[in-house]
Image (cartoon, rainbow over all chains, first blue to last red; front, side, top):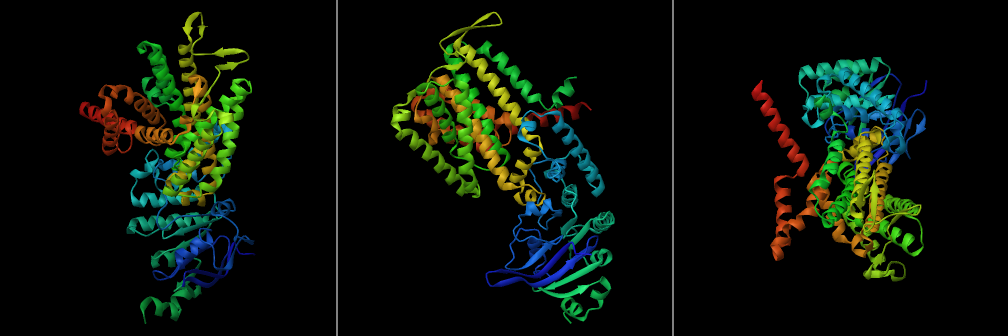
Length: 252
Length: 335
């Protein structure tokens, strides 16, 4: 079985600072794969590299065996990769449900002619997309906001909305960057439930997260970064017992 | 039934159509008609510009350039070379669209002030060309443009026509024509905004990163909306040329570009009917302020400043928020 996401010798330098240095790992389809590490360890940089927002200084990323070096983020989305952000990226000039419908962009092929005259085919597709978006909003638990403007939503609801938008694109792999940050205990528990549901439906999940309880509970494998380098990689059990990890986290 | 109507997608369009039908009752003389026809043509231009500025969040300080190109293409093709109006209008729009695409690809990589400067430069270059190519354009003296003509039938402000048995003057016929054009322009804009393409455009404004990670090719959509808004400007420029019967490079001037942008900002960015209101107010204001004579420009500037300070979202969005707040209060009081 080939890996869905494979990272080989990845390096990213900002000026003289190596944010990510010599990182290699691979993620199998269907896994929940988490990246952890102290602040500034290079986790978000790694995600930005994988999703094409940054260009690697060295190294290679393969998505389904294909090199992503020359691909723009939107082309990666076409190949089944979607993500959420630590600094949420919500279109505040749109309604909540339109944000999720935006996620259907690749499924909704439309041309200028059908659009300008609003032909029946477009109306049908739009209605279907709206229905699907509403289902996804219920699914992630922001069904209360079906008619809301995005700007009227709470922080926790927006975090879930961003996940709904990513799911709307029907990705093979979804990257969640600190989805639990800023959430309370109840919301975090709901999030854990949601990530489990997403994984159970066969979508590969990559996760950057600080909440150890959450990460240890749902991950199949973990990657520990420290100062941009791989400190350890393995199952939650292996990571928990790894002396380097204990030293880095507890300062022992 | 009134409720379903008020929630209908085309509510605004129907209200606009009603206003355009009723309006002639308040128009006394040809000068009024001329003013309102100009308003309609300019309003349709800024509806197109608003797609770029209000919805996709990109700026253009050179849109009068595209308006002017459309006007001059029509002037030269129909006046100098004897083309019929419709082919001139269409070929002109395609040519302007192509120019916008070629220019837009590189400059839309720029953001904010840099994009402003680049589009400003595009407008200036077009204005300079129109001024200098005397042999083609007549230079700063301008050039006459024949009346609008389809298969030998002419629409001239000086003619007289019969419509459903009614005798109407040329300026009235032009008013009707411009009204229909405005309604179609608005209908297209509304359809575009509420579609996958429109969502992609708005997402470029909302968050380019978010747009790109769900698969929106942001560069492509920026170019697309730049081209669409340029085509709007070109088509309206062509009609404007026919209507005025005479054009000068002033139609492509910096002042005109700024006027377009001011209409969008004043009326309400991202509000199709707001920018129409913006066009109406900015065309009307100089007439109203004419009494103040030398203070006219001071008053004009003052009104713009005060509006932007107290209504930063623009006239229509602020007013409609105010009205719906009042109505909610009233409904709440009755319950």
